[in-house]
Every structure is written in C-alpha cells, then in structure tokens.
Image (cartoon, rainbow, N blue to C red):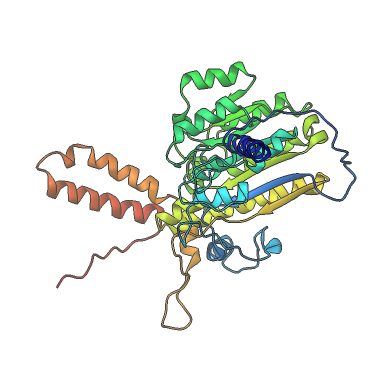
Length: 409
C-alpha cells in the first residue's frame, strides 16, 4: 500500500512539473529586493546584439569609418573575446536558436523561438525581469517580430510565425516599450488593444520626440514604436534621404531610438526602484551580409557602434547598470583585401562613397520589371532597360563606373 501511495505521489509530482514546464504566468510585483543605488553590483542590464557581426565586420566598419585608422570604434576598448554560437542542429546557428541561447541559457534547434528541442517553452531573461517588477523593452531595426527580439518575449516553434509572435506581445504585455519595424504583423484590433491599455503608438521620429518631451519629468515608458511595415530602412538609405530632406517625420536611427528610451529610463521611478532589462539589436548588419553588400553592412555596423556610445554614456550616468554585447553569428563570409599582389588590394574609401543599399537598388529595378519595358514579348527591351538602370545606379550611388560581364567562350 505504501508503494502504491508513493507511486501516486510521484505521478502527481511529475504531472505538476510537466504542467509547470508548459504554462507560464508572470505577474509584476512591487517588492523591495534590498538593492541600493549606491551598491557596486549592477542590477540593470542592457544587452546589445549586433546581428551577423563577426570580428571581420568590425574591421570593415573601422576602416570605412576612418581609412587612416586614427579614429577607433566606441566598442573597441570593450572587445574581450569570442563565443561559440552553434545550435543543437547546425554548426552554423540561425538568429532564432542563437537568441534563444542568449535569452534562456539553452541551446535549441534552428528556427526555434524560446522553446527547447522538444518544442516546449523556456522562460526568458526578459520575462524573469518583468516578473520581479523591472522595466523591460527592446529596440531593434528589423521587424519587432523577427527572430532575435521574438526569442526574448515570445514562444513559437517556428520563427516564421510572426503574426503569432505579435499576438503574444499584445496579449502578454510584458514589454513596457518596443521600437522597430514590422507594423504589418499588427492588425487594427491589436493596435487598439495596446492603446486601450495605455500604450502610445509612434510611427516616426517626431512622434518619439513628442513622447519624450511629454514624459521627460516622469520618465514614463508605455510605448510601441512601429516605424516601417517591414524591416526598418538601411542606415545608408536613411542618411541619403535625410541629406535631401532634413525632417523629423521619418524613421529614427538606432542611436536616436536608444537615446530617447534611455533618457526616459533615467527618470523612471519603477526603473529606479526595481531596475530594467533592455535588449538592443543592430539587426540589419546581418541582412546586408546576406546581400553581400559591404558598404551597407559597414554603415549598419557603424550605426550600431554609435548606439554603443549612447549606452556607454548612459551607464556613466546610471549606477548599477551593466552593458553586455555579443553577436549571434557572422554573415556573408566577408574577407578584406585581395591578393596575391602585395600590399593587398583594399579600398575602404570607395565604400564610404556608397549612399544607396542594394536593397533600394533592387526596388528600383523591380519597378522597371513591372513597367511597360518589361511587358510580355519585350525581353530584349526589358534587358536593355535593366542594364541601363543598373549601370546608372552603380555609377551614381556606389562609385562603380565600369561594369564588365562574364567572359564568353
């Protein structure tokens, strides 16, 4: 009889553990954890992730920033080492598995968003921070539902389930602020839900500035900024447009978003009492790497580095705040310099002159494909129009003035 009782108790315990592993309930608390703002140990954390940015990309950014190498990156003095970022299913991880490792402490399969190899949800550091009353939020330049941010604040078995990720953000309301792109994944009902629960919705930099001015004294943070239907525009394209039209009714840069949020955090009473966890991602270094677009990649890495400077300045003003930074993987297989002649051929000044991304160029070429020159039975006319436009784009925006085709045999 005793053995039967023990078996029943054991089964009940296992059932409780299994249930606990798949169901989460987080409640904000208002307790004093006996932290003191004058203590040396940090209680607030700013996690910075330069997506797809290996050491070679920082070398690229350093040389494009200043080909004489007299100016260094802000992050240079803080570079400490490397990490292994393989997933449980691949030598080369994707952003989902990598961000899950950072957010939960567990390696998992590619495409997993804060779930383990059995597709069961894992608690994240952001959720744990919210559970103890800390201010939590994320600032990214990709869609806010993309793999890296999603892995800190949602749980799905496939990274492509971005509508579900957005729905979890809105339903859970674990985020005090969320800034980035990806508005297309939030329907009108979801946006109304956010507004009815006290969130301010921002759609451009001027909205951010208005929110900052209105909440400067209190430091209140209840903010969703969705600045693009898809990923936010590349820095190189934003800088080109800003040069032609100096307006604040535009997408904010990553440093501008970071500065706005951190200026409010310094006055936020909840952050002062309980601390905060912020995840910042320079998302689009990775995308430029996928496109093999080094000029755009360099400027994205430089924008991330400028955000590092903003955070370092904030840390100097904010006791008990730590900054951590780690890339999730490299992207693009970039190699600097070409031999065998010595010295190796490497001309970063040429990349400084690039002021349009290949993504923006592709959009212009796609408009030609949709036009009359590429109508049915207009193959040769279409090819000529695409070639002419491609040469013009390269000459005007990348300083590539000579285009040679592949050798014919």
